[in-house]
Amino acid sequence: MDRPAKLTVQGFDIYKNALSRPQQEDLRDAVRDIIRAAPLIRPVTPSGKAMSVRMSAAGRLGWITDRAGYRYSATYPGVRGREQADGQAGEQEWPPIPEQILDIWHHMTGIARTPDCCLVNYYDTSARMGMHQDRDEGDFDWPVLSISLGDTATFRMGGVKRGDPTSSVRLESGDIVVMGGAARLAYHGVDRILPGTSTLLRDGGRINLTLRVVDHG
Ligand SMILES: O=C(O)CCC(=O)C(=O)O
Ligand SMILES: [Fe+2]
Image 1 (cartoon, helix red, strand yellow):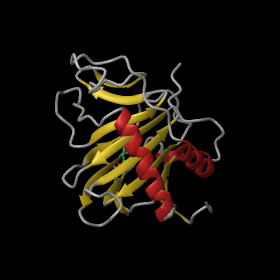
Image 2 (cartoon, rainbow, N blue to C red):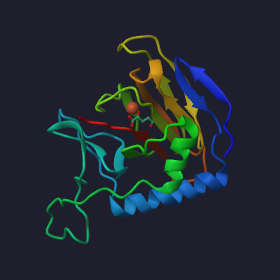
Image 3 (cartoon, rainbow, N blue to C red):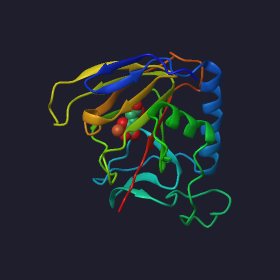
Image 4 (cartoon, rainbow, N blue to C red):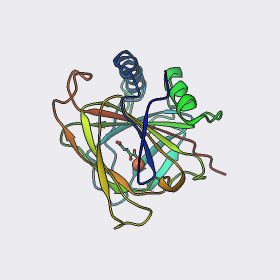
């Protein structure tokens, strides 16, 4: 994997076309394995509103949200079919972060430390994500790395204050974004998914992976 060309927009480092089609297919299959172990759930925000994005995670910690708040959890909050036929949420750990995803993190960031969380977001063509900061981690010196797979998204980037001017870029399958430095606490969100823009995912939609060092305590 070469170091792809970088475009910087409002402090967000955007690497277009960073992953080849075979790499994207390999990642797609790795994500399928994660989702098999920890099926996608549609989380609710602390106010009780269902998110349009569905989520899973891999790693030591997964980011979750429910009525109790936004946080990282060492266990999967959903109900797993086979072992949890009684309908009780389990005390099941998240699956490990696949090696090829860790390789991308190390290669793109140059950071030796392994991320704690690989959040998996699945957007169907009507899903979006409102403008927000990623601020549930314990240390904002570590960047967040994001990988896009499947249909193109319109990704909106702002500043560190809500209401700062924004601009948007199209993130296509195989693009990588690194949010570090000034952009680490910048607002960002996904305005929309452009249906039919990729053949990577059989049923369409978009997968976004975000890698984070959580570093609590
Ligand atoms: O889907 C994306 O590109 C961004 C996801 C995101 O901002 C997040 O999961 O915090
Ligand atoms: Fe985010």
